[in-house]
Amino acid sequence: QKEVEQNSGPLSVPEGAIASLNCTYSDRGSQSFFWYRQYSGKSPELIMFIYSNGDKEDGRFTAQLNKASQYVSLLIRDSQPSDSATYLCAVNIITQGGSEKLVFGKGTKLTVNP
Amino acid sequence: DGGITQSPKYLFRKEGQNVTLSCEQNLNHDAMYWYRQDPGQGLRLIYYSQIVNDFQKGDIAEGYSVSREKKESFPLTVTSAQKNPTAFYLCASSIRQLNSPLHFGNGTRLTVT
Image (cartoon, each protein chain N blue to C red):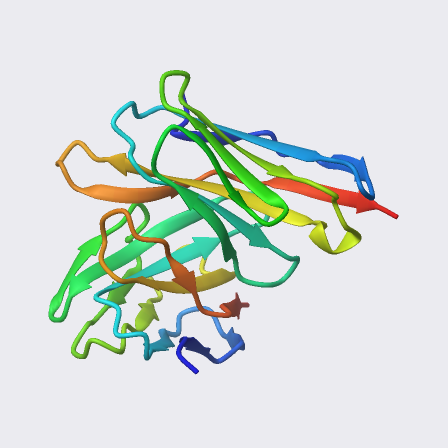
């Protein structure tokens, strides 16, 4: 099983709809979860991070974490065309040597249609 | 403004040449990282450093080298031993390694022909 998995998409939603992006991870010991947005040709930018089970809201974005099921999701309410980008999920993984590293999924491409 | 500066934005080299990518941060972050991104692939960790004069190999360190002589600087050298060097290279930093969000520079797109 891959360490961090995301549907590659593309995910297409109409403007104003809710976009739901999902991510599953393999390490039950993971404690930190991040969502990044990456526009084509640009570097990733941090949208949200979440450490505890439940929901965390920031404006139109909500991160949801369920450690028992090992998934983290990102909801984007009132989607705008400017939200069209690739969304990267990142999870901290404990290595066999006991150190931590941040592992990225391959990303989900979101298109918001006007 | 605080941030991470990568230079140059685009870099072209001939096969067999070593090339060094610059990364400077003024965020006073302890940890710095180098990632590589290829089309259709996630970010893959090349090297990281938690403290000055110390660095660790990531998942794909072969053909790369780094140094961390100053807290602000973490240059990456792509050597001729790297078999597929053409890629988008991203430098990042965080306050500390554990549980901290990464902040990325704007990236360097390296093309080797």
